Image 1 (cartoon, chains in turn blue, orange):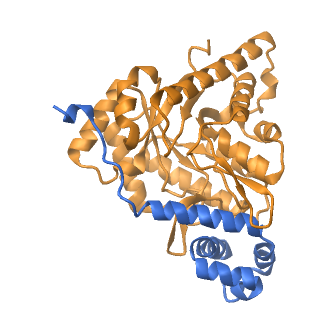
Image 2 (image 1 turned 90 degrees about the horizontal axis):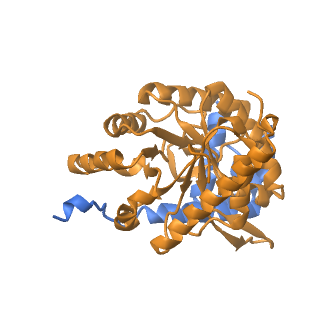
Length: 80
Length: 293
């Protein structure tokens, strides 16, 4: 079950800016209550913070792009 | 010239579809993002099918999230299977990534912890997907700005283990590989050599940009908004030198689209890189350089 909890924790960390801010301020506190082993917590606490912040920005930009209207599909045989 | 069976094509995008269609003769193959057609109308599906009859087509999935300890979303998989059944592409592909967990849709390809657990989950999900679709997927390496915590395997070992256990071909994104290596301070050529090259049948070429990291230094962001850098074409040459199997190379671009002649130029550059690698291989065959199966 911990592997499922680990993926869920990362999904939360990558997509929820408030949770991420709390994690960056106090990583151990943010991990408490999550379904993680002690070893997983230590690894998460040691995460590459720059990488996390940049990845989260990239994810936020992609999520934002889904809210914009998409280009219409174009088919030449519809022009006639 | 590249080997007769190497092919070079482009990712089909609605924003540039008119230009792509006018240059259809220039593409050996086109790649269409499958998820964009899950809710297409019958007429749109008929049009896509007609396009697939005019130019060899691969379907590229982005939303299955096969590299996860959780079973693949059945509804998403069924939609993909129906689309493949309708369009009858030459191949379909997905990623070594997870995209949802704990009820959260990440909305982006994300690297799961590289562990035995996610390896097993990916193998099971690939099998589910292959059964549902009726064709094994090509599996693509992803770019990640953050190394997944709690990993016990390095990227190449994790990918190799899954690919071999699943017996799937690999779609090797050379810019993803380049970006990950540079961001980890590794040599991209060394990472290339560690990948299961004997399984590579497809190649993606794209680009990105260097961004400032909050604590200083820079990271390479794979944004698909720029053309492939020279280093990626060098990797393609080396790949073509190392392997004997034919390669299908796709130029991927998701936005900031340049004029069509620039994209055609990138394809020409890819053909040149392939040809150079094949020539080097002919001049000095080194079949043992690819990993033994």
